[in-house]
Image 1 (tube, rainbow, N blue to C red):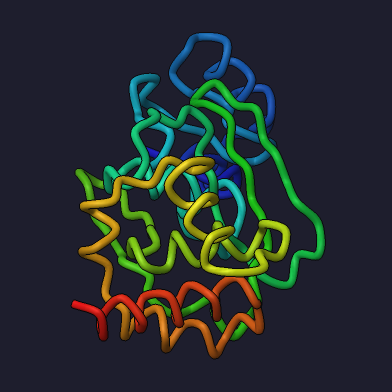
Image 2: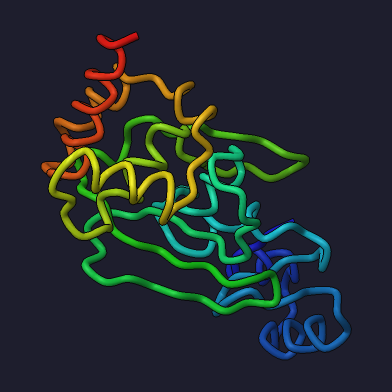
Length: 197
């Protein structure tokens, strides 16, 4: 279970030197320090369950989410997350893995996020449509559909069959919130493909 520093110290009751007790618990292996002020009791906890506790508000997105949905073939080790209004990318190296956090526009941030619960943990992850929009938002501007196809299917190696299962209406709605030429291009590309089917 994940605990913040204050909660752990409250659990120590009236003990005078709570910092010493905390250090002892870490040395014994009863607590694993994730980052300053955040601890986990189970060394086998998968990292993705801790992502939103480490730095927030945030949700899992970008490559990690795309891999989780099978949209890209690679297994992604770094847990990639989206934030807003932080103005600076963050990276944390922890005993539970490496976590990165990147900003997306604040208007887009709250849309298309799924809250998941696993055992006693809860975390947030982008829908497949949101994850692909977040990823395209971070890339250099693409000029045309040919550039977009190369980026999606060659550079990112997006699975073409799973790509056809994305909801074009969701991407069209999201495109109004990013002010990104890449996401507008994706929305128009999907709309064009729908017409051609």
